Length: 224
Image 1 (cartoon, rainbow, N blue to C red):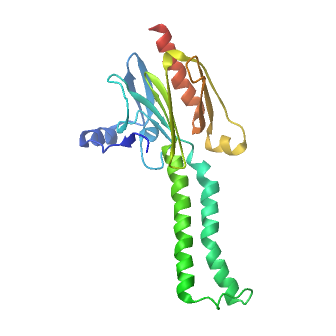
Image 2 (cartoon, rainbow, N blue to C red):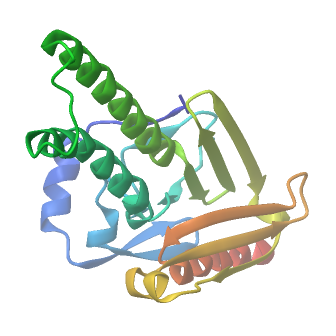
Image 3 (cartoon, helix red, strand yellow):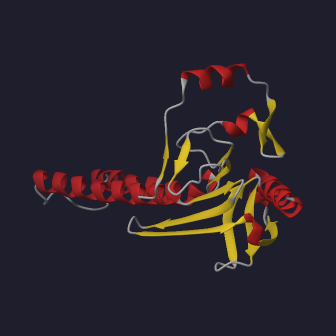
């Protein structure tokens, strides 16, 4: 599994977050990032989080601050969720069809039918687990020093790319389609001069805000 985990919040942090205003300013070096309280909350379905205080990752530098935590927008999971629901209803449809004499399954022993159902729903559970884990661990991070992209697929494949902000040459995004406009997500493209020429943050929420944060960081590095 990728070396990213969420630690428990300190009581002091929880108390300060409850009293925080809807918009607050968090200083990182010479730059101030406006933080929306709604976008600073992290949970298992979070796809966009600003300045997450409880996220840790491997090889984090001593003076490195995490500014953005990104995943694909949760709405992109809807296709496989619909597939899972449809697959889950197939046995029910078969039993209804059997009760209406459209098909016959009475010749099968009840123990055998139960065994098939258990195996069937184990496969369905595996399908749901793999899809969720693939979404959960495909993460992009923006810090005050680097951009990190973690590609995780099918449990057995993990690829981690990182580049320094000084190597970023250009950043942009595209947001095509009504669904993407309604839910405000799109693809962010980061072009670099490093070994990895392109970083693609696919279907991430609030792409315009993401590139603004990166552009501000680039401006800081150029002025340093």
